[in-house]
Image 1: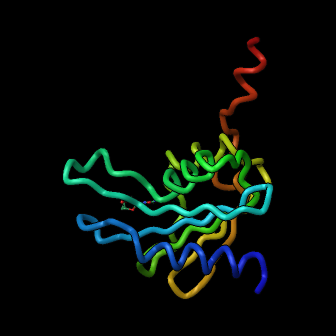
Image 2: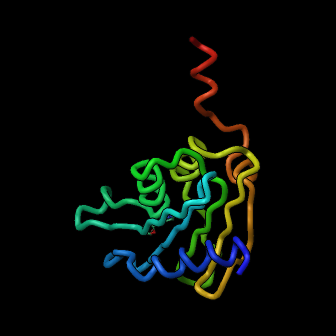
Image 3: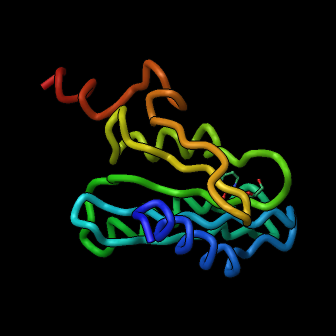
Length: 135
Ligand code: THU
């Protein structure tokens, strides 16, 4: 299996564990960090709707908690016919730990539909480098 196939398989598998009783829109994410380790996450909704969390946020938290620091590549699997892409907030979350050329593979349950660089999803982004310049 190629790296992308493995990443998709991990995201597809964890998608089964999404907790999305309100939207019924499950999302699974797999990240491969720069050390080659995989980290996964799902969306976790809540009866108090605004505090639900996205799958990308879960996968990033898992990466950081296990010592990973940099996203090499990631795959997002979502339900439905329309192409799932990370929400605006998650694009910024990814931005913290990825480079402009990092690939984000967007997939349906049947496979990767389209891949984007982070730069394509979040052009002219604000990031840690802006704050470093102030020091
Ligand atoms: N969702 C994600 O987990 N990631 C995205 O990038 C898009 C949206 C979740 C949030 C919510 O639980 C459900 O999908 C519907 O918005």
